[in-house]
Image (cartoon, rainbow, N blue to C red; front, top):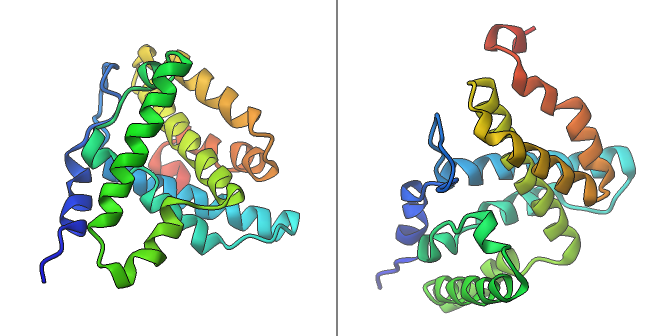
Length: 191
């Protein structure tokens, strides 16, 4: 029996992000997803180790791997469009849910329940994935700014503001301890 689920997910490499912005270096959905999973895992480890939160970093990381897979169907709708007003925001959430449901339908029925937990995570896991998603955006902005692309200034400020608004202690730690490293050269990062 053939199954198209993973063939669909592997199309993430063809989806470019930041479509309305002039990028000095393009970023694919696959890159974003991997980075978001790395960050989500780290945030959950920080929460578990430093703040004694009852959270599974592995589950958070795997959930992050699936967080934007619906975009192989919907494409990456730019943030200013996606959140332009409540009507568009609500309509896009419906479109995104329909795309996720379509992807879930592609998974063999005996495996589907396991995958559903990644598409419908509990609120705590979703919060960590959301924070990681915002960090991925912030890091992309900082990378573009370091290349001299001033077009990402407002997006960087917006991403940082969104991270702080989450009031997540692990996010504050990541912001303080890890994000500054993205502004240094490779030689410096090995020290």
